[in-house]
Length: 187
Image (cartoon, rainbow, N blue to C red; front, side, top):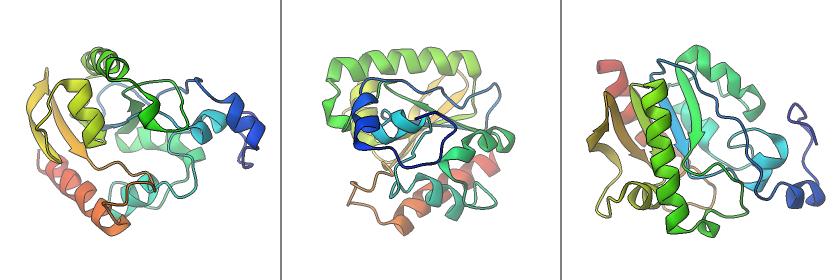
């Protein structure tokens, strides 16, 4: 299955996607660099971030006002024109984020700091409180703005948009994204 394809990946495509990496959607001077935990197998098979149907990243992004319409995963490059990007704490794909070790998350956090130092987004928004706590050694971190910075880049934690995150409805997720959007608009 090619990265430009929009067909649903087969079970064989998904199995073959284990441990793949997909390119970041990134450039210098972004307003917000959204950071997932790591790509799932569906994303690995399609080459697109947050590609699994049911992932709420794209609807939350639109409902919060970051995008003028709801983009699809295959339109991810359009984010750059809006001053937005996507990366991950850990680059390799897995079936579930809990397959990542704490050491892997910490190493990914160090690589993420290097990426932020290189591209200098205004805000790095990590999508997942548990991954943020482990990757950055902040066990008491909460959702929202963080007191630490990476150089001039502010840190923010948002809930994981995976459909598996039952703690947040789409409306509640969009509300958290909206708080970030308002802070970025004010800053």
